[in-house]
Length: 136
Length: 317
Image (cartoon, rainbow over all chains, first blue to last red; front, side):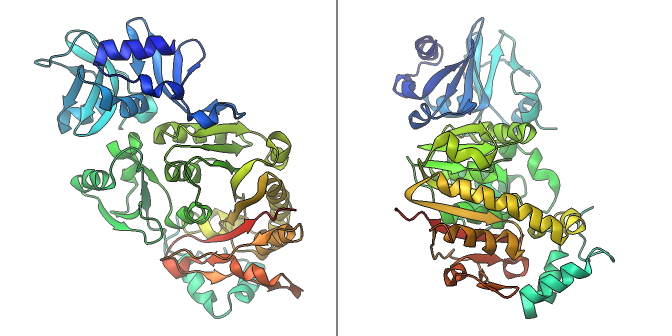
């Protein structure tokens, strides 16, 4: 699944993340985590952080996945203004017009800050910000 | 209920007054006056998720005023003192962590380095774990241990939010930790569960709960945890023992039990943080002179919560 993820990222975002391969570990059937290489052999119940999940249309990225990998993305990144960024962080979907993005996973950005990913269905970006990370 | 500049009548037990007066001498009144004041709110900037100046600019844009904490260059006191900082983009995205200023000191003293193997024995909810992870630039490993499943949930959420990919969470009774991992750690932090008088500024609860029996009961657990933590160190490794309280039974007497097992107390200084020396005598019992190298951070010294910090080295046999 790691090779598939690296390949998907390159196709979808135009960026090469293969040099990070040693940080990626598969967790369960669908999730990819990032773990420092030194930590892989250490006993514990949870290692590192969750960064991506396999979904029917490829992968979705967690907030941390977008923050670590976003800088490698060359396309399918949606930059928001402050007002829309606040709406996004409240967990709402974002209608999208005039952005050159393809259907599928997009990375959301406000200024220099990556804010997770969503699914662009051609009209709006479906919000993947988890409940506990949303603004009240 | 939150403290409001005056300790309510009846909350100070006579046994507390007698003991703390003896411990603090002429500083007792000032100590008490600061215990009654609310804590100043502070945050830590996550240097791994953004440049310090960019995160500061983001917060300033929303009206927050920041003042640098002298002993940790990524720590800031913030104004206004409302609860709102937890509901900002910066917090939700893990660019900042709300952490009391004095509690940033134990990781500064331990000074974990990138690539090292660190144990945080009583890690939840993870303020010091995530601080150390950032100090290590997400390299090496921190084993973040805690015993309580509910506290591990909070720890796990904070580690995810702050992006700490070099943290491995473990759930075990800390008293058994050396049996699980052996003597492998470069550095160990034991920020021990305690009677929490240093946190009275955020809640009266600790003052309500305090009694000498509680202190003695907790000190038994603290000593057992400290011994296990010390055993988990590599020979030559460094350990910080800290609490957020002042009772000598929970502090110097615990460290003395490690000295009795051959630990060396290491002298340290935290630039910008005013402290008092650790006690070398209590209730007629003479302690090792090196206990003076441990530090007491009273609330009135820096207008913070209170802490006790000791730095120890495992002497190779």
